[in-house]
Image (cartoon, rainbow, N blue to C red; front, top):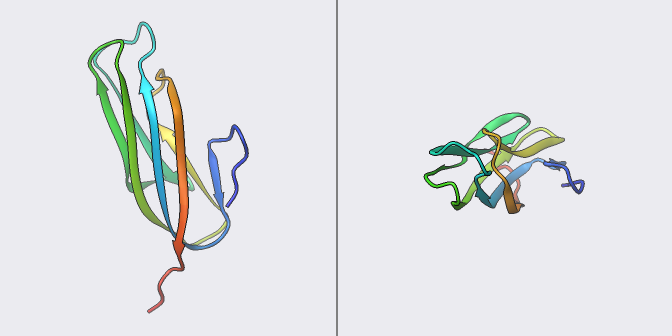
Length: 109
């Protein structure tokens, strides 16, 4: 697995079963129309992983919220690229983390 500082991508180089945990504090920018919704998805090679999403609807302009999710997923082909993707723009992210752990090999029948 590799990650370049400043890049949104994590490159996975070994097939297997993985678990990803995303966490971030998000707020609204000044002048943002309220209510405003934000969704963050986790994508593997550009396709959203099932269950890998967090959504929040901001109801005040000074609001901050924590978005997080944990999801297991399978990597069959390598290299594969994992990316946290905000669906909407205009929301500052603070103290974001994406932790990826390899749980093991893909079970064979």
